[in-house]
Amino acid sequence: MNTITTGQRLLTGLAAAICMTLTTCHEAQAQRTMNDRNLLTVDCTASLSSAKDFGAAASWGRYILDGFWEVSASGVPRGVALRTGDRMDLLTLRAEGGYMHRLASTRSRSLSLYGGGTAFIGYELYDPSGRLPSNINTGLPGGAFVYGVRASVEAEVFIARTLAFVIRGSVPMTFGSVTGWLRVNAGAGLRLNI
Image (cartoon, rainbow, N blue to C red; front, side):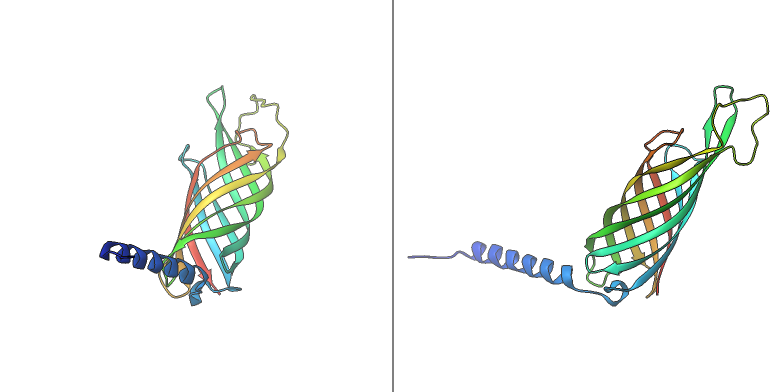
C-alpha cells in the first residue's frame, strides 16, 4: 500500500510552486525592461582604494530577454604618488562594450540584480595638465594605450516607470597602465529607458 503523508504533499507542492515561479518569472517581461527596449545610463565611479580616483561614464544599450548589452565611453582622472612626494595626474579615456545577465529580479522588474562583464580599450594620458614641476622627469611618454576586461555586479532600482537608480561594483583588469592592473570600483548613476 502506497501512502503519502501530509509533509510529503507539502514538500511536493512547495517544490512545484518554486519550479513554476522560477520558470514563469525568468521569461516574463515587465514593460520597463522588455526585450529590445533602449536604455541610456549616466554614472559616476570611484575607486575603493583611493578617494581621489573617480570618473564618469555615459552608455547606451538595449535590454534583451535575459539581461542587457551596452556600449559606453568614460573618462577616469586619477593620481599616482611619486617617490618625490609629488602626485602625477593621469586621465584614462575608454570605450567599452559588454553584456550583463539578469541574476534575479522582482516580478515587476522594479528591482533587478545583474552580473556580467565588458571589454575595453582606451588611452591613458600622463600629466595631461602639466602640473608636475619641470625638474621631475618620470621617463614616461605622454601616454599609452590601455585595454582590459571588467567584471561587474549591478543593482537596478526603478524610481519611476522609465527612470532607474543604478548601483554598481566592478573589478577592472587594465593592461598597459603604469598605475597597476587591478582595482576595485563602486559606482552609482541613473538609467533612462526610452
